[in-house]
Length: 214
Image 1 (cartoon, rainbow, N blue to C red):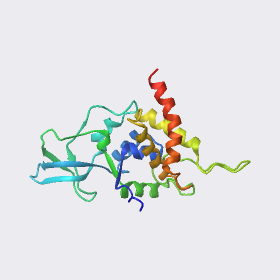
Image 2 (image 1 turned 90 degrees about the vertical axis):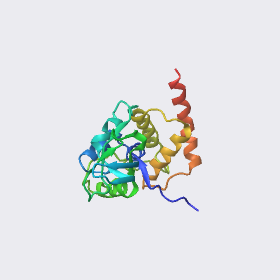
Image 3 (image 1 turned 135 degrees about the vertical axis):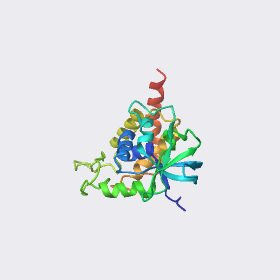
Image 4 (image 1 turned 120 degrees about the horizontal axis):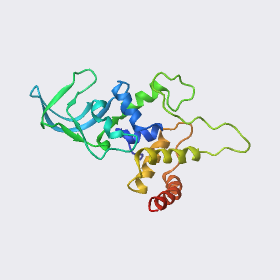
């Protein structure tokens, strides 16, 4: 039985899926184009209310985590949140310094990134762009011979962007998962099986690993 779809993606996962810098996504959040979320521990607000769980956070509070020169190692402090788009922002009184979050803690709920993909026409070459422009890979032009079932040139480019924007993955397995997510966002063909992706990643991983030790 297939596993259920992910309930959320991290900003880094989404950046790889959309082939854009994570900083751009944070900027769109500041502009109100997309909602970022995080899982808060139990906190007390200035109105003496208790809150915990998944809440929306302000992009301005976490934008420093997604610098173009790599993810910040210093956590950002979230001092405000809201429970939904229809509610007001609430300020955290306890902990007094707010809640520390890292880049991996900042997420985009599935309904939200799917909403953006529909609204902005991502992965649909015929859709009008009504929101921020995200780089999408156009279908390969016809040429002599049968075209490959999957665009491995774009695959290699997506890995290069991932390493450039976010640094080397912790493990080869993490890169395989990232690239499976990337394929899941492309609707021109069904994604390849994980074994095929692992084999393709393995060759690139060896080159990346060898160059990182030089």
